[in-house]
Length: 526
Ligand code: NG6
Ligand code: CA
Image (cartoon, rainbow, N blue to C red; front, side):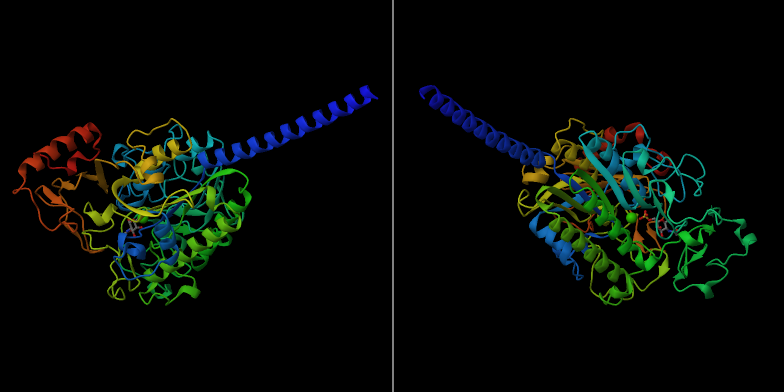
């Protein structure tokens, strides 16, 4: 009996030990999950196209209302000195994905049907994340070039996003004002009919007239949006585009449905990857031209199509937020929202962007705009949001999109740091520590220099104002020096008043750009 009792007791003990062991194991597993999720958040970059510093109402500069972006800005960290890496799209996106200044790469210029400008051997943001167990996807505008030579849209298009790190891609090749007006999924044109191959041509004196296809130049009567400058090639869905396109009828996108279409793909990506660590680059096309809001947004802003597509984009961002909420992903997703360059009103179509602007200020009181070396070219909305992790706040520290690769790498525990980016993870997550001390600003291959509160713009040949878009580009035959803390709209040139500061900045600027400056012919440095 005694032995039986003892065996029973031992069994009980064993059971107890085993249960405790299981409980502990469960705890530690949970703990590990929580920890690993916290140290490795999902990354969602929401990237807008030509959205200005004043176009987000949380910045209190303009009149348009963007409640969904505001939600991220007001409950996350809002940067007031956040920069895109260039005042135009392709170089800016190149720098975001590689952490390298775009002026180091002579190919990093606005792309019109051109080849991929990221070397497939280069380290990129998606590659770093993939090596840390992430699944990476891009949905939306690409504009970093495709292929190595002339692109054949009728077979697998490569290299492209999938060759520089994205496991999944659903893109528009360049812009919605450029042909071909089709979506490309993992290198394949979506809905392409083999019997109706696509031909694309960007030659200025194209022989596309030979095909007897209407163009904006020859058949303005067939357009429902009039071109102002450029944009007089093939007419697709009533909109004249840059370049000429033939065939691919079945694959043509619907402009008014583009926002819903990309949103659907982005939502699908989130649903499918809710169990993975994921990186999604949600690259919206708004408010770039042609601005074609879905009819349910038409007229809502009272500012014409430009305002309407901003409301449409804001709504899409709200929908993405809802999806993350529904999938219970907000607590372990770091969201970065920004724009690839500053705003422009008339970028080539008559769409009343100027006429109906009213007292809205997309430029947020800054000088210049898209294409410009002045502040409005590259100072953009820049927001970091991570529910329950990033405290709501405002940072006046300087941060650039070029820092995202190094910072995100650091956040996920990777050692990689890019050539020109800084690890600003502490600033992004904790609003703590310093931002950049200095930054090279870029616009259409020209460069300028920000150091602390000072901006120095070297002299450049070229017109001071691009009359078509009515934007001051920053060209003049003298140096310019501004203290943007006292003079954010860069009105007072201080070269005479503070020559010492000017000389200091010229010296430092030259030492940074060195031999890498790729357009010395544009630079008149004495
Ligand atoms: C310019 C286009 C402009 C826009 C820009 C690219 C003309 C006259 N202008 O060449 O409309 O498409 O390229 O914009 O064709 S970006 O935001 O993608 O850099
Ligand atoms: Ca852009």
